[in-house]
Length: 115
Image 1 (tube, rainbow, N blue to C red):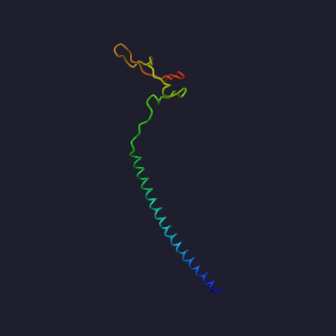
Image 2 (cartoon, helix red, strand yellow):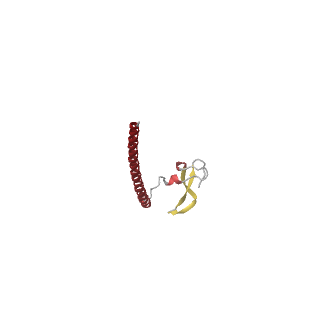
Image 3 (cartoon, rainbow, N blue to C red):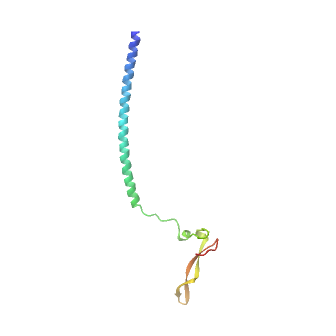
């Protein structure tokens, strides 16, 4: 009986030492994790500063639209090739020689609205 009790006590001591080793490893890993999180936070702040500097110095990108695609019919909402440009005979801008030079107006091909 004392022999069994002695064996159990040695096992308990072994398990306690293993537990203390695991706890020390856990504490070391927690310290490492805290250090890594601090480094990560510093890197994030540096990255945000650099991104804001890059965004402020970024050149303006040209738009994809041509001047015809920007025109929208106020009546039906058509765009692009559905709008044609014609001479507006009611607007005389000037004369070149004896021929008049007219202004331009836009006409929608779908609904016929001129603007």
